[in-house]
Image 1: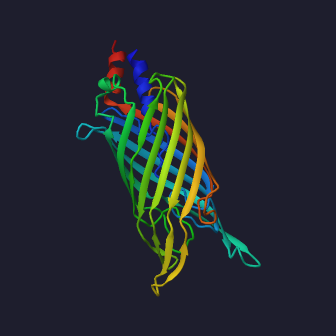
Image 2 (image 1 turned 180 degrees about the vertical axis):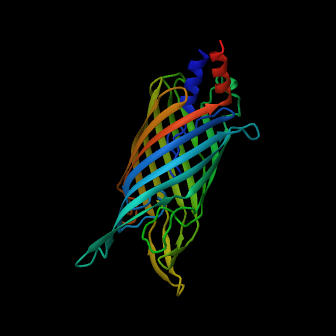
Length: 330
């Protein structure tokens, strides 16, 4: 019985995390001392780098392959659930650049880039509904309404070439502040769990001082991410996903003259998609997510494309190891 309960807990709280869109059931309550190691494979076609969705180049069509390793550790602070996540990305871009697409003889060129992406460090603390509990107490504690505060910093460690119209890395520091909220609906019973999740956030974007001999002064980005999740079986759930991104307008300032060369309007983009999760065993979870952009108010400067993500997460806990040793010795 204990093994069944432990499997249920680890399936519920295994996170499907991405640096810019977090994913469903990311902010469910966690017990103390839980560790989650995840590998993500992400493929998408878009007018932006998947490692830098806040910067859109309307003249680009890029096939992106992004690979991430993420590690999450839960360690309560001030008696509240707190967890820290480190993102380590790498990938490649195969892009087609339309040269003077409005001209009488539009032409294009292609280029390829591979390398590391921007490292992200995210920290999240619960401010309502999720006390920092040991796993034995966590199993008996029902958290129906959860509110968190999140802060994350993006470091400009990714592959970047000044002359490229698009890069894996952003060459910008970014500071994200969020207020994730989770409301459990109906019965909190294995195989019947239903939740509504809303994650509003705002990202401050630093200057890119070296973009084709220009400085890019970019405004912040508001994002609201939402998920309606429902258990399919005791070992699987499905989520309907919707996100809205607004902001990121930019000025391109000449490094030689200091004059504004052009301005790019803020993007307003809607993304809709779905996620399916399957619990393989008491350690492993598999996630499949697909998102598609659709009509927005600024189509020519907004994110346009599709993204598909496959995630394999491995969870381990001190209590789990001790319990396994107890079972094996008896």
